[in-house]
Length: 253
Image (tube, rainbow, N blue to C red):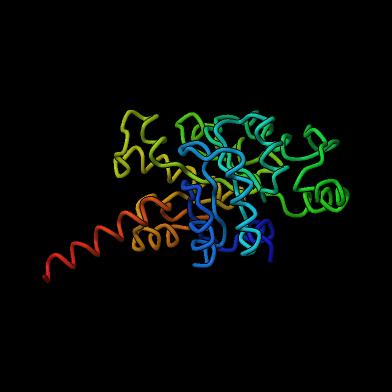
């Protein structure tokens, strides 16, 4: 079952973030069994050429590649989709207009406004019609809910046709509320619960990014009702494992 179909059926999926541009990182994480992987261009030094290379690696592992953009820029959307991305994750979606613009940047007319070009996604020009059909059935658009303005407009955002899922960015959300990094602050938790409730009511799957790789926190979020969950990221998984292993080793030698 393709990712878009899983989202439409509210099937639990767990992904992670890639910020390091080495193909082995992508290959290892895809082989580990993540349901999707985000190539993060917003908070990393990944360039477009890195993104295409990593997409090619993930394609070889049959792992959907979602590109986290730096902004809701239709030219950037067009380029990463032409590189072969399964979909996009759009930061700082605050209004229904933001969400609609993201959807229109992914799809060709008449559904959207995406410019038509020939690149890797279209088989370098040999399979444009096949790609056009693939796009309708497989492209994924994820709205990042990471500002209190988005929380206050959540019903209208999630009601936009073509938004397949949402994901809460807890750090930016807490920052927009004047409590950066205070994820357990009551008002931050209330905002998160408001988004979860709206998604449940509107039948829109979503989740939250569990930035620190904590299995117990992931399980709590699943129990709360989230079904599209980001778990850690390459640098945090590497750092926490290295530190914990070395602490255990130092304690016994």
